[in-house]
Structure formats: C-alpha cells, structure tokens
Image (cartoon, rainbow, N blue to C red):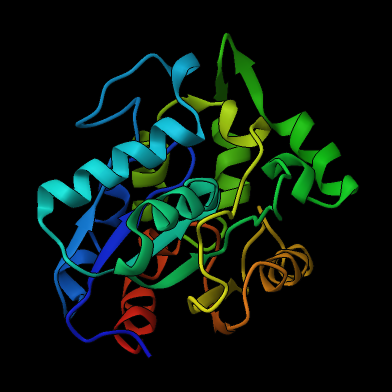
Length: 240
C-alpha cells in the first residue's frame, strides 16, 4: 500500500491541461498537484518541440517546486508516455503509479505501436494533424471521450481541449530506472470508447511486463472520468 504521507501528482492526457482535474482535486484526502505539460497552461511551448523527455522534465520541475517528498503518480490517457520518465527521475520517492485508462508501451516501444493493429488503423483516421500538432473533431471527441457525459460535462470537454503534440505517440518509451517492485495500479474504464475494455486488457498485459506488482480496479466511466465521474476517480485514489 502507498505511504499515507505521499501526495498525488495528477498528469493529464492528450488535448488536456491541469484543469481537467479540477473536479477531482477537492475530493482527494491528501495534498495534490495537477500539472500542465509543456504547450499549455503554465508552460507555453511550441508543440513541435514537446515530447516525452521534455514533458517528464517539466513534471519533475513542478514536483520540486511543490516541495513534495513522496508522491503517487496518476495519469490519464497519453500521460502514460510521460510517467516512466518521471518515476525514473524521482527514483525511490514514488510510492505508486496509477494508470487511468491509458495505453502502455513496453520497453523501447512507441505508444502508437503499443496498440493492436486494428486500433492503430482507427487512430490514424481519427487523429488529424496540423504541422506538429494533433487535432480531433468535436464529433470524434464526443464519441471517444464524452460518451458517458451529460450536456454540461460534454460542453466542458469540447470547449476546454487544446491541440497537442504528435511526438507522444511516436517517441519510444523507456522503463529504465523504474523499479520493477514499484506498485502499479491500472484503472480499467468500463465505458471507454477511445480505449475499449479489450484494448485496455492488452495494455494491462503490457504493464505486467514492466513490473512485478500490478493491481486492476474497474470504474464505470468513459475515457475522461475526471469530468464524467470525479467522485469515482477520487474514491479509487483515496482507497490506495
């Protein structure tokens, strides 16, 4: 179990920012920090420069600024590309990794290559590109990430998403420096239409190759449960 004194570090997914966690943070029973990856919010940057290493270093700097001694890293969606680098950079200061409906690449693999081929083909048709940034249509975003949302929640999703970097999908991920004994929890999102349950099971299998302790928790929510089911997300995290 995680150290009761450790703080949550909340890492957003693609096309998101720290604000995607604003409904969860008040429900948590320990200190927390919702970060902005480079290219949005507190950390403006040219998206064609934003990749895995830059993002991990940005999160590490935010953790040091917050003066957290021990942390639990929590990531949604493509945040999983950044999490191993953050965990390696913090060495023994991480008590747990929590993957909230995320892809998981094995050592040396890209996030895009972590998907089954059929999912890669679908992703290629849904992700639009403009220079070094990805875009998705409102229709696709509502279908993939907002299928479990009411009108107010969907409005939040559609009006507060931002362009994002393609590099998260195409840079190799390394687990070097991350202890195999570090506990990992995968939160399987049962209503997810971006990563359906069968794809999440594939990712859980990938995660088990990276460590010796992987727990799975199910949550009735779609791809952005921080918006559609913040109480459920908080309950899972508070139970750690």
